[in-house]
Image (cartoon, rainbow, N blue to C red):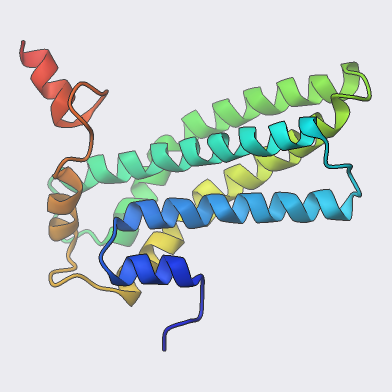
Length: 190
């Protein structure tokens, strides 16, 4: 029954590694693989600017997924009568969607300006970024959440209710001194 997906992801999920992290890594890997396929299909030369675009997309995609999963963790900590993880994921994505649309639109406008106004050296960077923004948007909304749900269904916890997930998510979710979580509460109390 095992062995249908990425072996490293299945292994870490089976051993109880952070399920949010595993889903984020798989979602970001999706973005990079699809972007490589775009580069191959369009016969773009893999230059330093294209590598820079891929690394930028890596950070961009990971950041967007982290923002959505952080909202999921926040919503898991709130009282929720009988809400499933799927419902909480849907709610969290809907809450972060306006922010995501604004961020992606701004990035896309800047990238399109590079496509139109920049020279030949920067144009491959702009093509990869423009395509990657769409892919990152898609995966953070439509790939990361379902991957998390798949991990939770494939490797259920002893108590796989949303309450147990909330307890797990609340435990050291953010380091002290960072924005959000218990660290921010301690700083605010000072």
